[in-house]
Length: 341
Image (cartoon, rainbow, N blue to C red; front, side, top):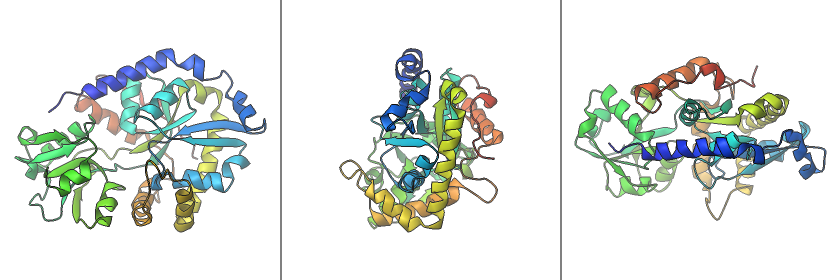
């Protein structure tokens, strides 16, 4: 198994950003950003986790319907250059909010990076292991003696290890291959026998749209905690000084989410009007299937959109400790706050 060099680079970057970037990019009073919106609205910059896709429909809908403006906000959605940009810039104050991953928030907090989650956008893992339909692999233990492709992101290594060992297999007999982001092509070309780092809301519908039959394994079924895939973060100072701004943001975002649930086709129309055609062109059938997969994972009968629980955070903290991605557990009460009632 490869060493977690990328994780160390990421954490080093976060520490440098937190130490050096905060005072220059984050105003003492974020309401000074009003001037950019004509003096009437408070500016809130939100860095997405990726280019616009189905998981962001609630934000684009809230903008289109004027929900943020009704709350006195001018919300700007920004695309990241690097995967770590949302958490880096939220930590330093380069943006007010960033969409990132729950395990990354815990790893950052364990390294004294002052980020805090204000909402859980997706309440379950989206990162699934995938295999071709006709594969002889019936469960993760069958990966012994097989090649598994992954995108080089460290979290995938303990995910795979936990899944294989929970299923009774020996991870030392699994060959992990860094295929970059050529995950779909690697499995359909049979360069590898399985892939991990593939998202059930993206690679799965994309492969199906291209005519490939694919099966998958959910890590939560094989010993991995049912962690929050996507959360929205800010930094400690911004939360302390501007909680009312964040509460207003979440009220408007939640209205957008209700609209998406009630009229997903209209929400997708809005999304497609805002897609990044040059960098990440969308396919209507893929995004329709993706949204159908996402909605039950974003809110349930018992858990409202955005809500977070101490138990969900603690389970993920404990798992990250167990697999060695953190050396010390952050205090759970410091790592998240709920904007929902």
